[in-house]
Amino acid sequence: MMLGSSASNQVGAALGAMAFPTIGPVGVVAVRQCVTAAVLLPAVRPDFRGLSRGQWLPALGLTVVFSVMNLGLYLAIERIGLGLAVTLEFLGPLTVAIVASGRVLDIGCAIVAAAGVVVLTDPGPTTDVLGVAFALAAAASWAAYILLNRSVGQQIPGLQGTAVASAVTGGLWLPVAAIWFVIHPPTTAAMVLAIACGLLSSLVPYISDVVALRRVPAAMFGTFSSISPVWAALAGWLMLGQSLASTNGWVSA
Image (cartoon, rainbow, N blue to C red; front, side, top):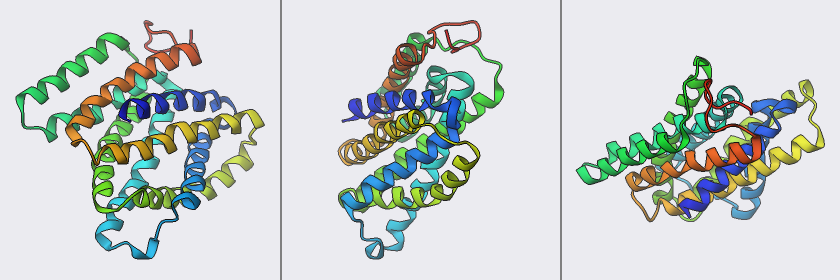
């Protein structure tokens, strides 16, 4: 499930990046959040009134994380490319893996995983400070996502918590989408790409991750996330034509 979630997420991100020229990262994120809510709400039918305060808190925390993580990542992708953006974002789960485990073996595995990511992706230098900052904001949000998603999965049965968080997030992004698309009229192709991004990068990972985090500790999940930059490298190369090595980092070939 973790492997499939990671691959789906990066393929979806590449599809979303294809829509940037028309609707930009904000438009893609808005569609992504609204699509996820539109699918999960009727499918799960969460009981909003049945949640306690202790259950609402991590669910509402996820709404903030969803927005910051996705918008930060896509703004970074627009400026520094998919591969480098996801490589920097990986610092979030890596930190969770190191902090959450007190065992020397686990910490060693996390460090080796990080070294392997750097070697395999060869991200290269970049002078785009703002792009790096967006990626690091996404990294912090990804770390929070792992911890909050685990809490939601343990406290709220089934997919109720994920559906609640997605519904609130979608509701917040709906007016943003309405205003944004008046200013930036979307094409059919851009909307199809953004919807596909929502299904592959939000719906599939949100469901897979909350189920997986019920079965594995946060440290293991964080270490396993080291595969994400590798998927991003392949998706950026095959789908976006972004070279694997460049003097300016990840740029369009």
